[in-house]
Length: 259
Image (cartoon, rainbow, N blue to C red):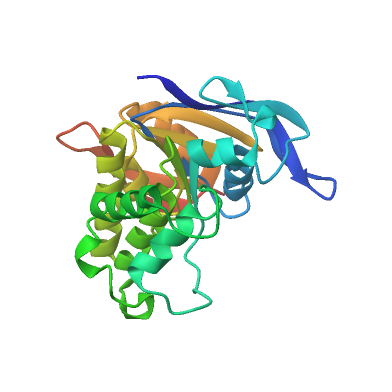
């Protein structure tokens, strides 16, 4: 697999408050990394730095071997599709119209081109949403709406995705559907970095887990059981009962907070 995104020694924050303090993360195309850690630990800040929305004070982000700071907005949009936490649309667009907005600024002129239409259709098919392309967004379930947001980012035809809590407020079935959609996208060679609150969701669908603690991001293979449980215990300040499933993946149940 070829490298997609790499963050080296990232120091960043807001209004003089340091949130990230030497964070590292590296991911190849075709892989998923779940960023885990308690509220306020810097997960979203790391995602903003990776997307270019927040410039680090120190360190560098590279996309496909090129410094992110040297790339223009058009080049970045071809490499990164960003999916924020679920947002209420300003207008009740149809699914097709919503996904088509992902092409804004990518084509010359004010009108959709044949390339735009093809990219929109392909994105909807990739997430299994083509059959409900004419439905209003207001009539979708949480899981369906999140898949449409994935399709909107995919309409940019990026080499990878950054997602901020893609399973937030979703029921178990919808969360599974989103996870399976992301695994399919990774299987086609895209890199995926997502922040998540559901530790077991991350352990099930990701290849790598970045555990946030003290402004750093330590990365573990999801099958590196003992080291990963130790890191999660420190990060969440919580003891876990855990077992390894048939595929070598962890499942965790919180036992008690650490004193």
